[in-house]
Length: 254
Image (cartoon, rainbow, N blue to C red; front, side, top):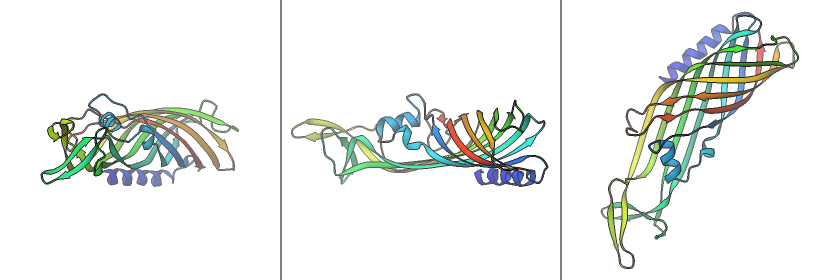
């Protein structure tokens, strides 16, 4: 589904590029995810239990956009961006031991452990966005400020691979010195959700002409979107895919 959406947008950009008096843009940015949620959020659970931090999921992005001018001040924009981040982490409060019955997680404050209990969490987001952009001073100035807003379709994938601790299944380890110590089974997992979501965005920026048909574009963009888990991550609340992006790019004017 994601590949079909990307192919559609790229086709639209190519077709639109043959129109007159509009712009094609290439931009490089940096995405900072909000990564918020309640106690049943995948973000919250991962940040509480694992060595992951919100800053670990900030990542560079690459994007393309086409602007079709309706008037000198008003344009319609189609844009596509790509974001992908893969991060490995370990359970901060538990360590692993291997037994005949299987692997178990022991409290790290009491035991050194035979191995770290770790997994990788990958997030990919490809937003296809449709926006109305306003340049109140027009587009033929030394500096062209603008702002805009709109909605979009977000193709996203979450993939967890590695060891997970099942805290719903408690066992007790008989320690000669400590008595009964609660421990939990460790299971290998490969959990993947690939879905689409709808969201909205707002942005502001400015363009600076540097040549007859070329401008440099600097932009701040905020996205608000949440995805629903329906398969591998059932039981978790909606997944926060929003955040903000700071980008710089080149516009080519037709």
